[in-house]
Length: 180
Image (cartoon, rainbow, N blue to C red; front, side):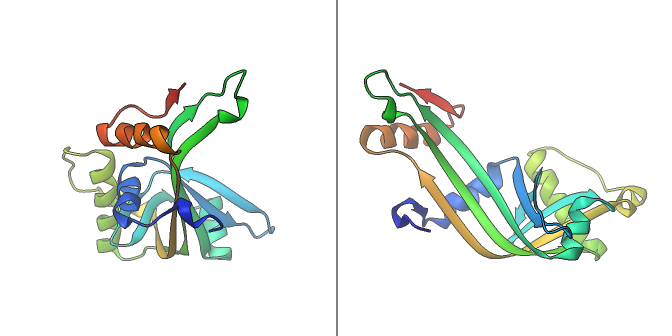
C-alpha cells in the first residue's frame, strides 16, 4: 500500500467489517482473459471466505480456469460536502478490505454444512434454522477462499472530521452519512 498511514493495522477492525458487511465482491479471471467482479453474500470463518452459488455458471467456470482470486468489502462511512468557497473539501470517508487467495469448490458434506451455518449466522442472526434438505445441498455449490493476504485501508479524515467518523462508527449510526 502506497500510503501506510491509511492501512488498518487492527485486525479486529477488519474482522468486524467481514462480519458485518453484507456484500463482498469476488474478482476472477475468465478464460477469455478478462477480469470479472461479482457481488455476493459471504461469510468469514476461521480465516476463510465462504459463499454459495449454483453448480454451473461464470463464477465456477472462472475459478476452474484460474483459482487465484481477489475479494473486497467496503464500508462507506460519510460523504463530506464541499462548498462554493472550498470545493476541494469534498471527500468520501470509508474503510475497505482487499484479500487475495485461492478459491476451491467444497466437496466435503460436513464443510458444506459448516459454510451454510456460517452464512445463516451472519444473515439470520439470532434466528433458528433447521437442517438443510439433501436435495438442496445437492444443487448448491459452496466455494471456499483460502485467504493468503489481507489488506485493510481507511480514510476517516483528520481532526474533528475523524472524531465524528469514529463516533458514528462507535454509535452504530446509519451509514453513510452526509457531513457539511
